[in-house]
Amino acid sequence: MTQNYISNYYPITIPSHRFYKLGWHQSFEDQRRRVRDIKPNLIFIGDSIVKGLSRYQKVWQLFRDYNAINLGIGGDKSQNVLWRCNEINFPPSVKFAFILCGCNNIDYDDPCDIADSIIQIG
Image (tube, rainbow, N blue to C red; front, side, top):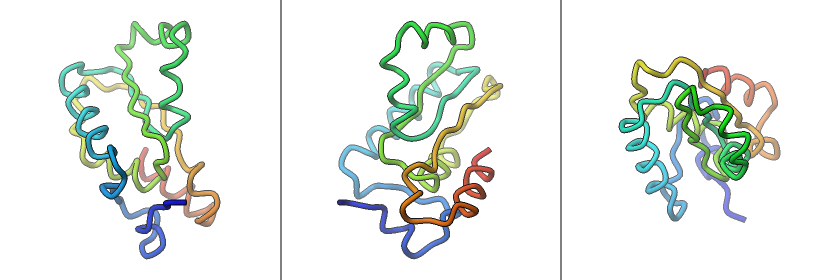
C-alpha cells in the first residue's frame, strides 16, 4: 500500500502534493486549466468520493446553473486538497465550494488534526 509519506513527517495542516503518485500531477494540471477556462461558480473539491460524483449525470445536471466543476482526485488526503487549493488560482466567479476530504487520513491522523486541516481548506 502506497501512502503519502509527507504525513509521516509534517502536520497534516501543512499543504503537500502527491507528485510521486503516477498521474496525479497531470490530473492537477488538467484541473487548473479547467478552472481557468470554465470560470466556475461552484467547485466540488476533495478525494475519490467527490471524483465519483461525476458518474451521476442526472444529479450533476442539478448544478448546471451554477457552472459547477468537479475537482476530486482519488486517494487525496486533506493536506493534498489543501495544496491544490493553494496552487489553483480560483477566479472571482467562484461563489461556493463543496469540500469533502479527510477520509484517507482516518487511519493515519488524529481526528482533531483532520478537522483543523479541513477548516484550513475552507
